[in-house]
Length: 193
Image (cartoon, rainbow, N blue to C red; front, side, top):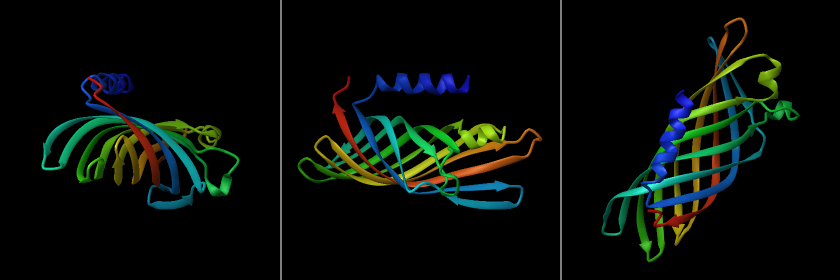
């Protein structure tokens, strides 16, 4: 039920948007930290992975070349593949989030921005978690980044953390944090309403 409500919220918020941005990019420096009880392990993820997403924003305040926007978004992150086990996937994440963006015009048609995101991270089992017969539960998604907007082209870099948990058939719970840096390029469609 929670998934259906979040999906409906995201779709309905699109109707209020001033602009919708479609983006894609590459993730690098991925790291999966797992904690079971007091034991913490860290695994490096595959060198480069990808993400694709959609965001919508509405302008709250526009003043003297600066702009404050809020919106919603979602993105699909490619499967987490660990360096130590590169033949199998660990999990795939799908964050749905709220977004806040503050931008400042550098000159006509060029703006510098900072953006924060917070939301819920849906997770889907990969080969490794299926083989281990573990149940999964999503968790908190957070991200912070900066970027450059040139007309309708959006180039950004951000650091994000997708949290989720898995539970064995014997009830042992493991908390996971997948952190990565992403370089993205997007295109903004203006005047959507």
